[in-house]
Length: 348
Image (cartoon, rainbow, N blue to C red; front, side):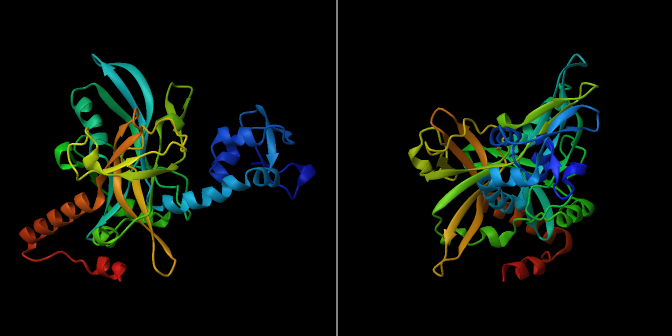
């Protein structure tokens, strides 16, 4: 950002700066600002670029900013595992690329876990063990929510077995958990991340949801940049889109009615959703008083593009399974039950 002397009261920035500032995709900004007034400005690297005023950007993107506010509100649970990896053959680097894994935060007995689809962790662990893949660097990106103030990744070293995952198609299960340490949990809290706790899922069977949305990071929307040493960085923003719920029993390719099944409507123009696995699937309901509520009902797992069908791993199914497993483990260690007071207070 810069403030040209001739317009001291107006803030100016190029498209990349406004994209970071307002959380609008660069391609959207290019389209909206095409033909808009601009001034020439010099970047930190000495190159000259076109700079646009804040008033013009906000005026031309008013509808996008309105939608973005709701998107950022719904992204308060969203955390991505990001980084760079190398594929290897006989110990030599074949390719380098950036990765972005969709996920969110789950709270079990006041301990926070990062949650994604189990197959996402499996895809990393197997080739790493075989010496076919190496994680160059990784970290958690937690700055997508409405209250986020710090746009820096939280360091995290990904290694095989750093998390626990289950992938069982016949039982409708596909989830992975990485337990966060105290410093990571505090950093997420400070940046406005909100966990999904037991109150979210324990009574879902008694609720009726009227519509559903998926939130995540489609791979085709990630813009990759190569730096001077050949490293690859991914630039990305979350995408949320509507789905219609359908009956899993009516889908021949579905091996269990435990899956959450949905179909992307024809009027939703997103071409592909590869990369959203692990992202939350939200269900929305309206109470008798007219107030709207949302719950995380599943995490995205399977995608069948020819029929635009998705399958999600039911959050009440896997989260309650994890809750009970931790409860039994705690009983075996201390001969009692873990402290649930903080979770009970959040549910009141």
